[in-house]
Structure formats: C-alpha cells, structure tokens
View 1 (cartoon, rainbow, N blue to C red):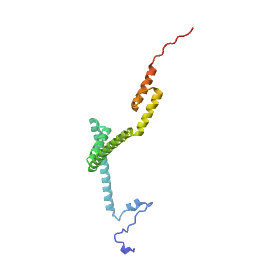
View 2: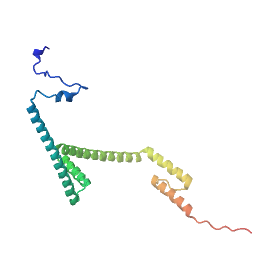
View 3: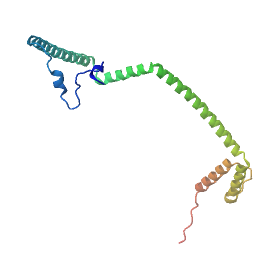
View 4: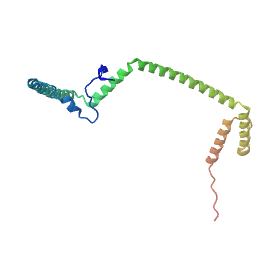
Length: 184
C-alpha cells in the first residue's frame, strides 16, 4: 500500500513494547510560552482539586465509619446484609425461578420413580418368598433345625425357626447349676 492510499490508517508512530511511550506522548506540541504557562497553571489547579477531593472523601469515609460504629453496624453485619441482598436479587431473577421449577419437577419425578422401584422390589421379594426354591430352602432349614435342636412339627416358617432357636439358647443359659457335693 503506498502512502496516498492509507486513508483511515494513522500515520503517527505507535509505541512498541520496550519503547519509551511516555516520552513519545509527552513531547510538547508546538506551543507558545504563554500557552505552556497556562496549561501548567491548569495542571496545578486540577492536581490541587484532586488532592482536596481525596481529603474530603477520606473525611467522609471516617464520618461514615463513625456513624456505623455508633449504630453498632460491624463489617460482618454489612457482609451478611450484602449477601442476603445478593441472594434476594438472585432469587428474583427469571433464570433462578425457571431452574427452581425445573429442579422441583425433577425431584417429584425422581420421588415417583423411587417409589415405583420400591414397589417393584417389594413385589419381587414376595415372589422370591413364594417361590419353590425359597420354600425348599425353608424346609431344609426346618429339617436341619429339627435334627440339631430337637423335634418340632414341620410346617413352621423360617422366622419361627429362628425365634425358637434363640429361645432355646436363652433357656439353656438361664438354667441354674445345681450345687455338687464335695467329697472329703
């Protein structure tokens, strides 16, 4: 591109990394002594105003802290209030409401699904208990019990066998021992 076709491109040099950009920007334009003096006075005035405003701001911040101290407002309380306000703002958004509604619906569906699963498991356990395999196992346990623990008419269920075995164990530990005679 030749110089005549630059159009919107700036022709001023741009400071590259490592160059002293401050010197490039602070080079005085062709100002007269009078204009430079006027700008220096304005600069001093603006710097003085900034310093005054900084002092006023610091005084206002001290006054604010004093008022808060007198009211008993601590930094922790302010933080709590800010968090509460922020949470209130979040919960007021439509995105939060939509998300909350979606999660509520999902929770309800999950609850229904778990209930359904519980019903299915209960039915399956009942089916297992009523199955021929389980009845055969139950009969074998009863036969084993009658051989080991004594006679009992067949036909009791598994729970009765367990209860009778624990009752027999409890009675045998509660039977007092008779004193034996000692020989001289």
